Length: 401
Image 1 (cartoon, rainbow, N blue to C red):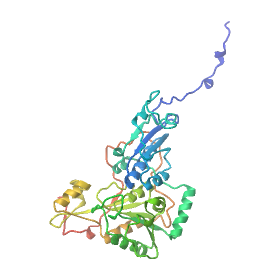
Image 2 (cartoon, one colour; image 1 turned 60 degrees about the vertical axis):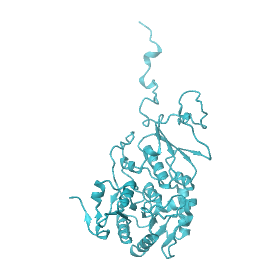
Image 3 (spheres, helix red, strand yellow; image 1 turned 135 degrees about the vertical axis):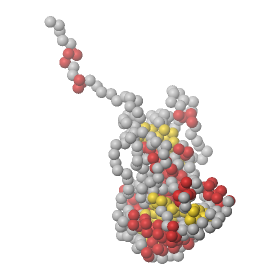
Image 4 (cartoon, rainbow, N blue to C red; image 1 turned 90 degrees about the vertical axis):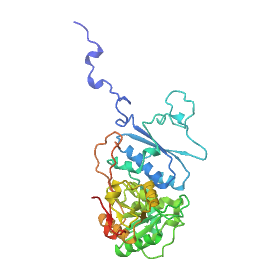
């Protein structure tokens, strides 16, 4: 008979189990999160907000992920925007002439450039995705099954709500947020195809109050033309970029947002607030299913309006095309007050489930995360295109045959 050793009674349950950090693709295991390093180099408000939201939406596709945002604090609204994106794990702020050399991505021992503190321990020298501005255009949002949402934390939300009430907003009644572009904003030049006559939005504001029974909160910058004071209208434009957080809070609690083609309108989609963007040359400024878009009108030299089907087939809806058309004698016409009133009524009906301040935000159904990057090969449009031909300009319409 042979003697038995200690291994004879060793059971499977006693054998240790390991989780190889690289034994599965990144993002599946907690030990190997999918690391996203975002170069948020945009300076324009809407571009910056959408890039941050895009990066957070990439993170949302993975079971385990980490998101770092590199930015330069050269606009007062940037820190406010970052503060309402809860998906960010680390913010790397560059000041004055500082910059982060590409050598910090060296994954070897003894890199030639000293990295920031905790750089290696947090794995930022070896991200799985380095997002640049060119990779995060608005048109990419359609490829996400679910998009990230900006939101305010509990304490911050309470403070901002109190401030909004103090500004004059009735907490027991719903309100709409409006914003449009004027040519006197100090960080951007005048753009005739996007700048809107303030009287147009003042007329729409009055109609939302008198015709739909709501309140209106205007956001913007201090140089905007003044509206006549009246009950139901609260103007936050004077706060400007120095207090963009209060303006964003108004967006987050609005029943809907009605905006021209400008950065604050993009923030509506970032929060998941139903947003209608009018006077726009492009479709992708808003991207959620509850959003809506109204294109600029294109009127041919003979006075006929180009139908949307023709304009889309001829790929007219982008800036350089519009500029070329104007040089050829075409007119680009922004929406009239009557069109915007009807658009406001459309959004009011679409948001019938919101009778007061917004307390719920639309999200896509939850389900297994794909743990992959979005395809992005096909452009998907989720917002609704709205048009009212009976109110449109032109002597007749050029249609597809």
